Image (tube, rainbow, N blue to C red; front, side, top):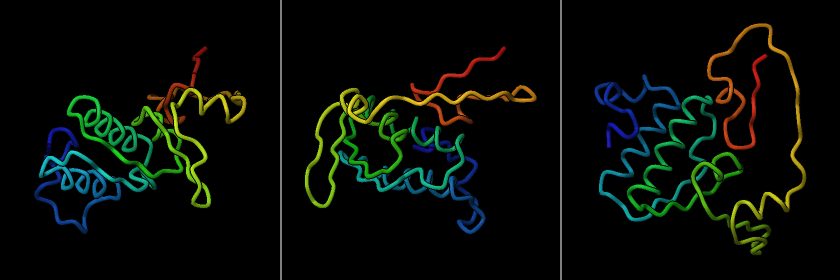
Length: 141
């Protein structure tokens, strides 16, 4: 579990010295100690920088796909939903508004927006900086 969430260097540190991202990774690791069949997560990547967010998403995706852990995810971040889930359930004012696949949900939410900008210098991991996910495309010219 320590390897999955990249916790080795954190195991001997006092909690008060950990960043938010490190604490989240430790909390997910602690939740997995007893190999649960189901994980209930509430905004697991909120407040994390993009690189840590990607690492947490990758770990959760591995748990779901490779270890068969069921993940119930509450999130306002559609990037989390896309990275971790195959199915979405939307509830608004206590009523079920949608239950189905992500592709259909995306088609119901409106057209994608394109934003073009020019950077003054090269940026490593540009896709991660932009939020990652299948909807983000970058082109270096």
